[in-house]
Length: 179
Image (cartoon, helix red, strand yellow):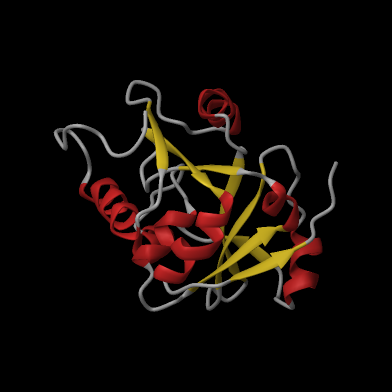
């Protein structure tokens, strides 16, 4: 379904803010709702994104050892994440997952709903976006509107162009090895 829902009823405020943000930018997007089946796993996302016909992304909220630097890593859904490999590329101490509280505070997303769109909530620029180069070759990216009961399909050039610029963020492209 193209665009925002016909009704705001039952929608979280943070989800509605995403639609307002995208609409204000004039960004085209397609939405599918899955309120009876929250997308918690990559398998859930793969089934949903198959409907949308968009690249399935892993979105990992990471922190350095001291929890003073934070990152949102976007990589293809099937690609493994190797801490050592990424740490070396970004010159950071060993990385681990940020806490649910840190992610919620900085991006407005709870675990299971991490999304590049959450960067619109990071007005202080605390989170660095890391994007695996492979995703840049995709036509469309699938992502959550800060909740995992809906998924959006957005043109890759829009995600990494006007959306990121309006959110006040830049991306750092990383090259992660495949399987």
